[in-house]
Image 1 (spheres, rainbow, N blue to C red):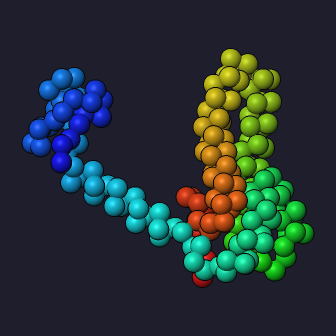
Image 2 (cartoon, one colour; image 1 turned 90 degrees about the vertical axis):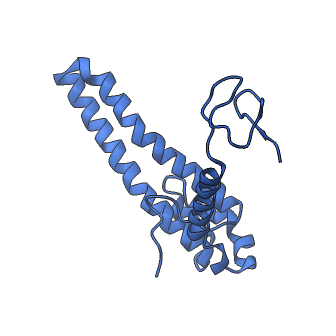
Amino acid sequence: MMRYCGNCGAVLREESLYCPECGVKLYNRSRWERIKRMQTRLLRSMDETWRFEEEDIGENRLASFFAYLPLGGIVSRLLSKSSPFARFHRAQGWRLLLPEAILLALGLLLGALSDLLFPSLTRPIRVILMIPGAVLLALLIAGCVISFKGKAVRLPFIGKKEK
């Protein structure tokens, strides 16, 4: 099987460490395959879809989707009280809501204080607070997509294993 450079597309020798055309460093195939296997194992360990019945998943995908929206856990609870699938996603949605609320309160407080005391620091403080905000937004979007696809995957940082 021939190898090709991912950067320029040049044909590579099996033992090449660098591309002869563009000079980019090549990854050892066995190392790359090991990384891919570890990623796959990690994702499988976080996927708990097998715990839920297909009928439950099919009927409660929308309620599970709402669970990740701010205060959507209330809507989700109204749509499906007894669904284990929706309960799984509601638990993650509530655990995501707390850091969102803390970050919002912190942003408002620090923004107001910096406007009054240190006007020159207002923009850097807001930029710094955008980083965890972006992470939370990514988790929120991931939760919405995962739940709507009918999967039950524990989200990083917030998706603790249920007993």
